[in-house]
Image (tube, rainbow, N blue to C red; front, side):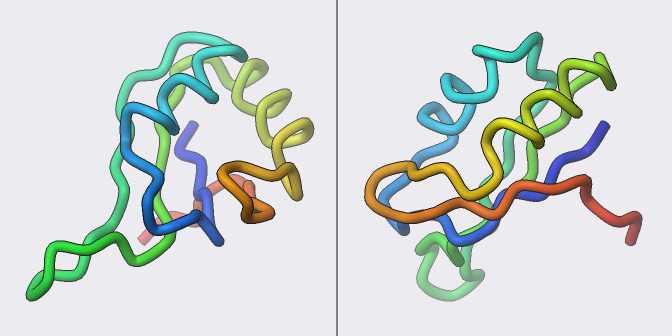
Length: 80
């Protein structure tokens, strides 16, 4: 399952996000979206997890939780 994570602190790194998500199960990939010109975080990213049940639990428990001072928005990512 692909999970959207928004309202991230601009200092959150992919490793930080991976650690948070691994508490719920195996993480296949983590991608924080960055501005093409400046290379700075845009404040959101995506995490892929193979186990849908673990992903649903992570979404349920992490939505509106605080990470580095900001309340995250966590939900299933919509297909492009």
